[in-house]
Image (cartoon, rainbow over all chains, first blue to last red; front, side, top):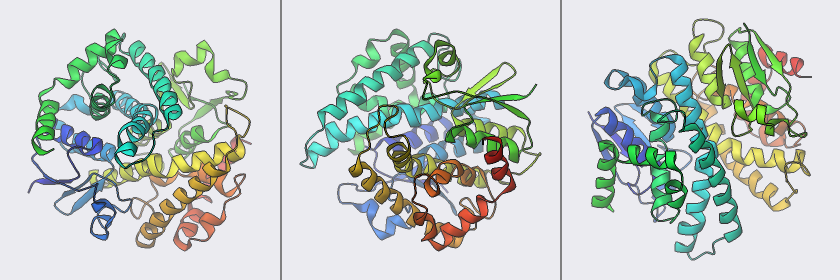
Length: 216
Length: 212
């Protein structure tokens, strides 16, 4: 039975899960959820995900939500397919978790706010808070400076190979270099640029982008 | 050699202290004064480049982000002390799910309340009543989901106390204490019972004692 992933392909968090499943070669079925018509706030969906957020996965009779919990689960369950994705020792695994937490708390909040203010709110007829955007962009530059330093010591965030910590950044950086028109944040930093070119050219991510273009 | 935990006076490091006590792991604490900017010195930034607390040093191994640290020790010492991860990988999946819920849905509005009510005038915070009102509303909606969940399950991830419940203690302690909004917990029958249970664990009382 294939893993069912509920959520639109255009949203960042489902993309995170799909990238992970593709890295591990786990078959899935993507079931769209229409955020524009508020499908995620309807009783049917709230039964699966009580906070009304995407994605949620159903794997036989096991249901799980929160994309960073889902990717940890599958990287553990199918660890034999890619040992390095979530660390080969507990110390390596903890560094993956550390940079996953950095992505979740220092990076994601800024990107989320920028996307909300620059893309979502205008689309809904509202007004962008430019001061807030400028503030977030400034903070994001500082985060990228730290990444630049880190990536001068290792090719990827948690060490010298691709892990869940790098994977978790893919959807957010995709937004930054495309719709948010902030690609200079990546391109102006030598090590971040090398890292982004490496992780965004992985076959699994390219497949997610292919689905993104096919289904959007 | 004992684990060094930086910043015990603050809430996020208390997640780590609580985990270490539950797992019966020895530690020592190193004070860091945020109000005096001790987290922004070059020496501290070498340990934790974002200037955040906590960070731990375990021999020559350094780790930051409290939820990464507690996952590490819960797994490394799985067979010692309280089992905070559950028995199967599905159990662990649910623990991680509710840890993520705490991190993304519960913590942000609660952190706003803490900053605006307790730390007004520090860290560039100016108390904003609109932020307080909106944050309380958001937190209330999250607690309504918790109320439903805890009516079906004794703890968040299942019938066992886990990292997910543990992670809520330090900041919820602020909520029912100096933030002055304990009614948000008390007014919800199952959330209240859950809070009474987890906040009277001997390990938590020990952490509060250590950090007095």
